[in-house]
Image (cartoon, rainbow, N blue to C red; front, side, top):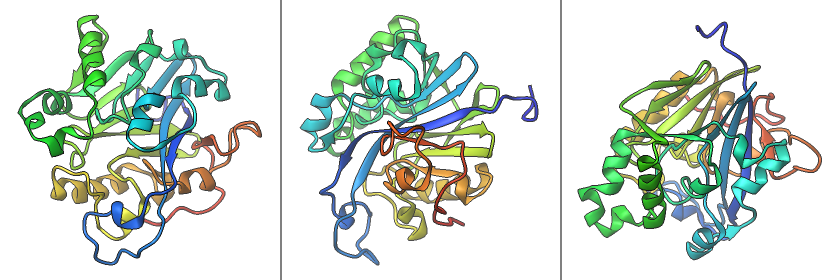
Length: 276
């Protein structure tokens, strides 16, 4: 099936936690051109829906894990699916952009989902790199064990590069933040939207060419920003992984979900920063 005949997906960002106390200097690798002051960080999962295909991109974290890391937990991502009329059992595919604690929890809540992870990510999270405390800090050992359990249950597959997950929905290796970080490109009624996940925590990371400080390869991170612009139909089609701007830029799915669910297949209400 080519791009012209692939379905358009309804696409949602669901906010499940936030970190209102975070400061700007915590969000950049270097302090150059970074002003002091608050720079809150939001936590999201994303859902793409076309017919019976319901694809969850990242599964968030549970309350205990989130609170232990010092962030404000708002709602369980699995339960928050109710805001868009779905249940955890409806998820057919779960794409793990990378295996950090805030992107890969709650796997047991999605019993019918086939899980997709990049080969380089599982090798990093279970291999020699985890001998170093700095590199293993963003991972959660129980979540990693949950992936191994799902693997032995036949629910996990690994990709080695770019891959078509379903017609109109593809994953692309970026790296940088982690070796196996992948972004997801989704065909929608307004064009091809790219869910950047942690290839772009904040739009400001791209505008200042100053990466988020949790990183394994600076060059891959910076090259990844260019890749995002090539994959997306325009800068208005790039969705940052943690920037609160996402919630204010796009319309809510419903009055009930205001501030919780942003509908990304609709044009933004307020223009996003232009990344070139």
